[in-house]
Image 1 (spheres, helix red, strand yellow):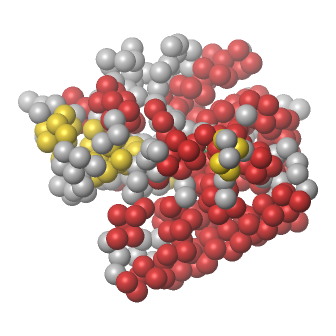
Image 2 (image 1 turned 180 degrees about the horizontal axis):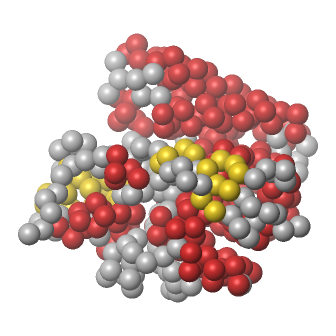
Length: 409
Ligand code: HEM
């Protein structure tokens, strides 16, 4: 008899390991109406990629969310929504097409390559600070600070402003992920976002007067015909880079170490040839247990999928974790295989919203994992279980205690 399905996506055992549940759903009801979340959950690779190509799966969620608020709430939250409204991830074509063309100028291959040197320095400095330690929390002491410092560096935030910048970026995380029901925290976070936006506005004005080739300089210079980004659009999308690139990259590093320690034969193989295997290893982490669990869309016009009718206004979760282990596309999908090739995972999304920061994330993840594992040949998990964060969209640990063992100089 096959196990029965239910709607408890965040049941504690499924937060620890979501994959058996997603497998069951993919096999038994791949397009599932979840009554608890009042949304469709779509699990098969072909359906998820098709949805990400289909313009009836809309990304424009901010205006509808604003429309649901009462007038008092709307007035209070309008400034926050004004920032979110200009995020290209929340726009559909043609607005998205215009913004994407301009914003993508910040991530030229030359710019990304120039970040390699800085990212390596940041990783090495972080490792250096751990030199006297025998055990650490891998998340808070290694995986978390790296993307935060790298993004501050490549935005040209002066070193003296780093701490306050970090406080504000934490505020953005609270606002987008964790403030439901906590009114005080939300207000504080909203305040933090406004301060961050004002700070970035000053930074943009400074860079207009003192042009430099960095991420802000590239956004200022971006031009399509007569069209340019306004300061408000630049600031909003800088906040998106901060938000979109921070927790995700932390989780790439954390989930990567977890997958390797949980598969010792793969770790041994990796240790024999880190230079040759880092690239495919990082891609496999993104597939096997990537930082993005699912993406959200709103149905903009009725459509039918596998015999179900998705109606205008319905919400849909496109479950990347389920798609990335679909046996129709991946051989032995539940096996972590650091040499897997080809590996057409959708850990960075797919289609027009494909992650703009993928090259930067790959760079940071590769450097951090390679340096850490080379520097600490005896790295091992502590007895304490890691604590996974119970969120719908992302997959990552709050803490991950590890023993470092002796450092190889
Ligand atoms: C491992 C790390 C990362 C993962 C797993 C990740 C994942 C994703 C995913 C799944 C999307 C698509 C969202 C959707 O379709 O709704 C996306 C979009 C985006 N990401 Fe990333 N991301 C990562 C790192 C970064 C970094 C480092 C940056 C920038 C500094 C960044 C900036 C963006 C932006 C701007 C978009 C919006 C693109 C658009 O809407 O056209 N991401 N990311």
